[in-house]
Amino acid sequence: MKTLKCDLCDVTADGETFEQWMMALQPHYKEAHAEVMESKRGTPEEMKAAMEEWMKENKERFDAVS
Image (cartoon, rainbow, N blue to C red; front, side, top):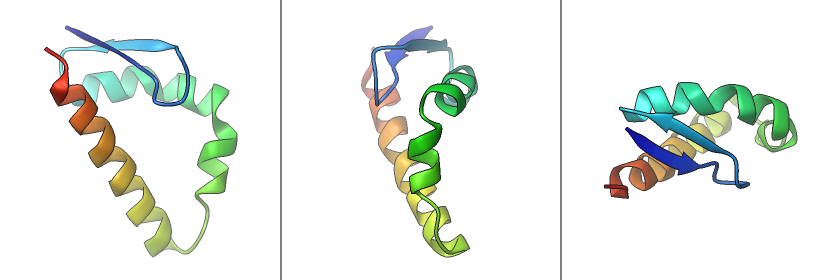
């Protein structure tokens, strides 16, 4: 089980896998950081690219934890 902080604050979430960790963090992100999600609005292509980059960075953070 890995425990990592949100990339924007000190709230933590746990998960055995990256996918589990992301699912655990999702409600927090929607509630506490909705403005960040809103700021990523744009064309579908821009939104997809931003989400892919965010997921890549967070997967790297998850994988780096022992």
